[in-house]
Length: 185
Image (cartoon, rainbow, N blue to C red; front, top):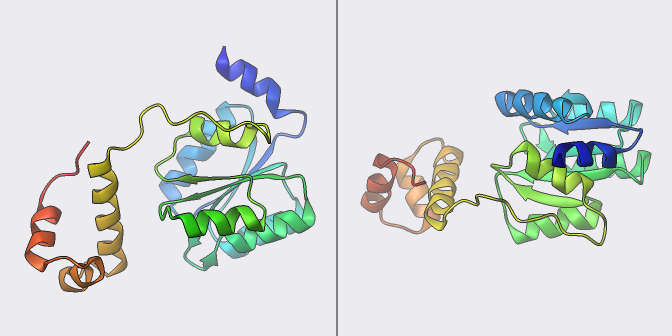
């Protein structure tokens, strides 16, 4: 019932551009959004996202902030130039207030942190301008958010424990114990 009501809110132009360099996530999200009534086109890089945005600017877009070949905000800029009324959600695993502010200033409609599911994305895309999307039904625990952040920094440091510990300002042994444990729920 809720999905049917949301399908009605999409409107006649159902084009959706998904830009993300995480291929498995991109495929899953594309399939889920197609099931929800969108006509999905995907791009795995800033260059591909900009090319699609220039040639066929969509009515909706979900753009990852950090891509292998640059910043997703470059795609947002092109979308704003080519189609000012495009509803854009910036999606990223690097949730920070500064990047959220930058994304909204440059023209994003909303900002979501990964992991976000298709329902979260759809709610953000279809939210009215004066309406805030509902909070996630099952948000991550504080322990899980901390663990995700540590894992992200660890990967950015090419899995170097000493460098990760230095950047996180924690003792190397403490970090090793955290990395050896399973992820919290």
